[in-house]
Image 1: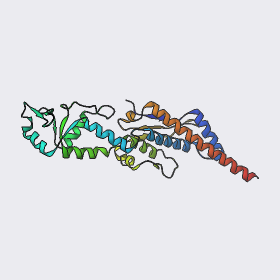
Image 2 (image 1 turned 60 degrees about the vertical axis):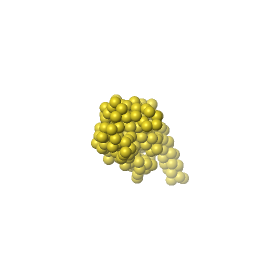
Image 3 (image 1 turned 90 degrees about the vertical axis):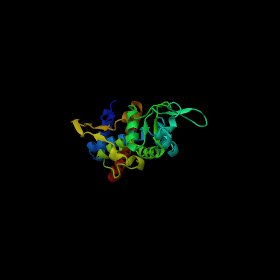
Image 4 (image 1 turned 120 degrees about the vertical axis):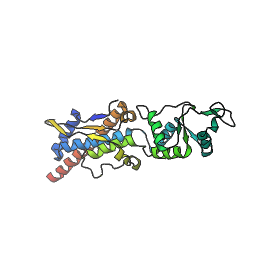
Length: 256
């Protein structure tokens, strides 16, 4: 699926920028960079998950879809094979339900857990729920360690937009202001691209911003992206209108 790409070259928007430049004396090229950053920030906010807790809950659920967690005492029985004494099946002592078989994958270390998880991810980076006897049997300590490591990746798709915001060369003191730490920590693992600012003719400028995280589209669909971009445009126009009114009032005072 195509990665999200946003173009900030709307003619109505550029006309407002032209007016802003004429009255305030500030360059339109810089304004395009500022608008691109604002788009990236709004896309970041609209990208799933809505918060850290929701993301962690989603990841924990995805992993539970794939694994049967085995405590230390049962793990010894599984590895020795004694757990499968009933025709290759391990039967729960109380319920009498077959909860594992000797043909299931057994995961004892982090590398195996990662490979099993990766092999069952869909295009959106999520997992489908496996049947009880289709899941991998995982050592309890290994599962807890892998879960802890995987939870750190919450916010990776958002981090792609954070990288874009930082690369936009906006003239703001803190380009990542307001972005939570759980998103920022994933920036070294994420990727994003900003094209060079191009002037096509007159006041026609174009700049492309792309979140290059592999499953970025799955975390921000086209309608969510459109909403974020339009919101960014409204905020940018509001900022320009405020600056224009301020400059006009300033000039009027000087003429008195």
